[in-house]
Image 1 (cartoon, rainbow, N blue to C red):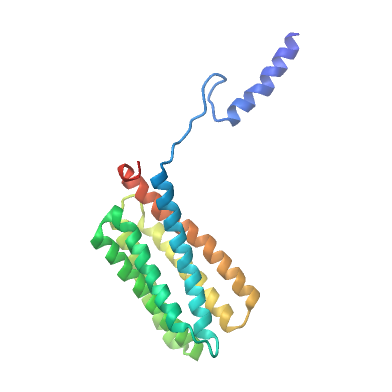
Image 2: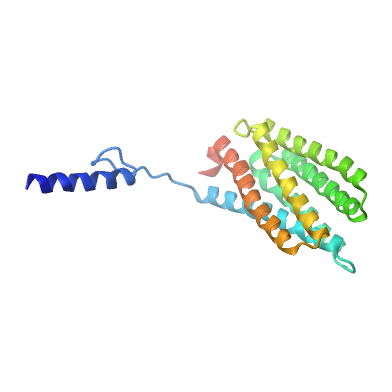
Length: 213
């Protein structure tokens, strides 16, 4: 009988540990997430996914002969940068939101020039524009990290650099008509941008918990 009781304890104890308890009698810790936090995080993530998808749509329009929607797609893409800036205004204020929009619009304008230069085969200009593109990424990282102590400049730079790399992969695959490779680059771009968006939104929630009660 004692042996059976001992075996029962052995099987029960790991289950308690899996449940997140420190003893057989303590209750698992539950972290409450407010509806406002869920809404902010999800909306911010959706806007950055739009950023990747509309950028990819612009690459399609700009590199496809006879495409007639390039102007309209660019306008929609630029509006996305305004939407991202507007999304942080309730947290960081009007001025900061407008500043982020300006930096992101510059990111898009430079990207558009890179697309044109790459399409025409002007490698020297592509190289020059890439330097501007990464300089802009540095400015975005510096701006966000200066506004939030929980967002580290180096971490943001790494996230932004990877975003630029994946957009470049998308463009290169499009120009090479490597459609399978392009699908991979877009999928990777969406996966990565979710990580970047969640990093920024998590920092905002941590910095201003009272705004997300």
